[in-house]
Length: 261
Image (cartoon, rainbow, N blue to C red; front, side, top):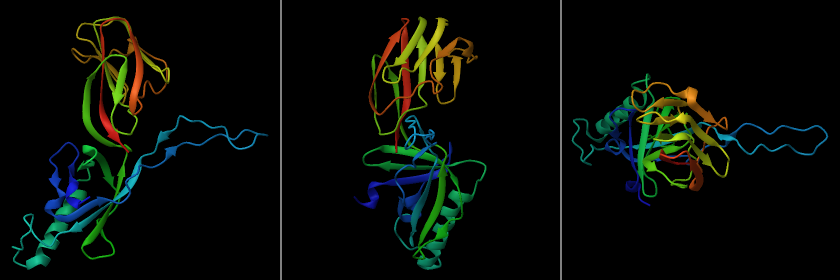
């Protein structure tokens, strides 16, 4: 796979992103896999080993971005008054600006990968842009509070099978309940369920699992007094086909962003 198969961009989260290949000959994430699960297993007296608690959650991720600073302009030409060295210093300055110029917001690192499409992670910058083994290669230590790459929106999913692309679980889906009574969505494998008690108000109710909110679609007022959940994590969808049951009439629609490890 050629370096050009991966298009990296970066900038303030929610703002304008810049193409890193305008300043670099190559960009790569040194560690591609997200970190392990957090938590530990309790030890039981007078028993060998540990008691396994399988429902653990993935830690936030630390990783290193490696950039190869270019000695030319974005078009590949040497036009700087100080020649190639001038371009290198200017390009390095732009990379430092992107990853250290605004400490008030997270830095969004976006890439377009052949197998995942366009995905991103919002990161904290842990340290300086530092030289590595060669004077034109620099590393940037990053911390991603959310451990997965976030991809395309997958919206309007209804029915009894919710098929999740990607290879990471979805713990922040948004479920919309419309035109029913005691509407309930149950995840068959885990038994986790989300229900709106009583008659669903006009316009519907939106349950944002990631944000932990339940509001009326019309007006956005809180509706959590009518929310009934059966598990502390509300609901999580696994990669692949998720069998669910729906009751209470009306329509129950689930939206999420595809995520990758």
